[in-house]
Image: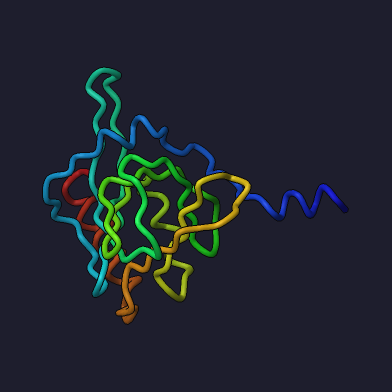
Length: 156
């Protein structure tokens, strides 16, 4: 029983997630595959590590945080459902936070009722910084699907 309580108190990491190093190679130029939600957005892009000759598809999530975090902070992004995904903060202020995570993280958002994402510093949960990507949740699943369709058409 005690081990069950300990397991419930921590986050489960995603299987086959990207490394923090690979997430750092994200292309930060303006993207074309964007889902906008009022105060925030989710963009599908690529991160290409030339030295290792590897490429991953990533999501850049923008929203309003409950507090600013240092740029370069290595965190765990978690929706209400699904596992925790590695995330790296690429821009931060009290009014706006941008982080990058593997694009499969966005798939977890399809089962959400709101677009608030928790960023945890450790897998044992603890305090989280909440990032509100938008209050305009009308049709957000369609917007996310459109961003994925766009990225598929561009070969992302």
